[in-house]
Length: 254
Image 1 (cartoon, rainbow, N blue to C red):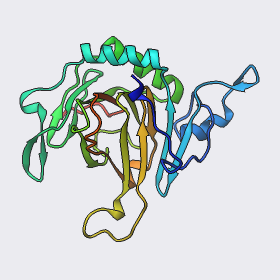
Image 2: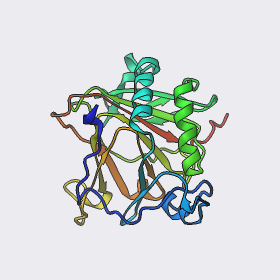
Image 3: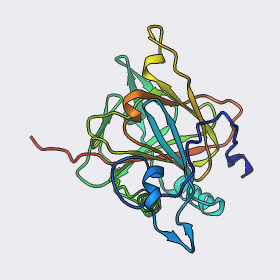
Image 4: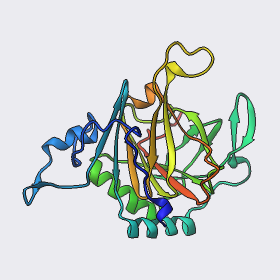
């Protein structure tokens, strides 16, 4: 399981500050809100955070689950999550349908729907392992989540292209909490102004490595200005399961 460890390099991300989490409030980053967190035994309570910051990018990163607990959760996810098949395992890109280069599933509260890449999905009911992870994330961030999108990457050939989580169902200003289990994978942020042939300026790509048991919180306005991706890494042979917890608006009946 050593392959699940995070590889740290000095240029992986901007280490703006390293402080513990706060348990309340909806505004600002987790790390910034942590300054007023009660102290236990003279030391700040909760996990240690790295605040990742660039122009319009505001994220917080921590390893939330120890190795033994992360291993247990990973195996439960492998046994219990039911992934989409058939038409639900395809994605629409520029009007054409393609097989998704990973497995996907959605779970959440009843009465919700979520639309992305040409698909409108209703989540399955929560299962205990997902509830445990969700509740831990809520405890350390002070945020509530009613939906999770699960992506399973069988190895480094499975991937996800550049995109923004900016679907209309997302509650305005709400963060997205990304929890990773399994193989450590590269995760890239690219500013919207530096993409494609018609890019108007150069903005340095922000590169992270998401460890086994880690939590990345993407705070507002990150998804307004930055695209993110999990690129192909052929040398990675182990699977990875990623849970992105979201707060989405209930479906309005017409």
